[in-house]
Length: 194
Image (tube, rainbow, N blue to C red; front, side, top):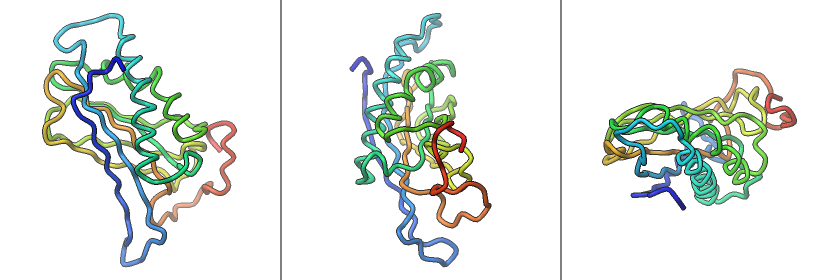
């Protein structure tokens, strides 16, 4: 692996009760993060291929860890998302290089299929700052019940010369969806939209 990883972490969030109603089975979201050294911290670089390749490595690693944490098979994953926070000596484009060109294909492999675009967010920040990871249905972007997000935070990351990279995977949509639209059961996953 070309990424110099300082630490990784995985969380699983389960919602058992919402608005006084039991959620059974509970909705579950897993988030896996890697805190990596930013090879371009403090300097401008035209060629960001190194970060793109790191994105490919992390897409598979973090996607697999989310699926394992949920205790599901890849085909049981329903939604996904990705996000990155760059420390103060980096630039937003470093996060974009990790997230966009190559991270998606290995993440899709980890969740089996993934016809829809992977929702993403990126920002600059420092240790302890919140990072929101947007979520959307993995096969059909029009499934409104899966428009969601999950928040991650690490007390010591990202440091000035680091990037915090997060991938989230769920086995369900929101706890009490009722805004209509295409349902998970109706999704075909052919065009990434329906």
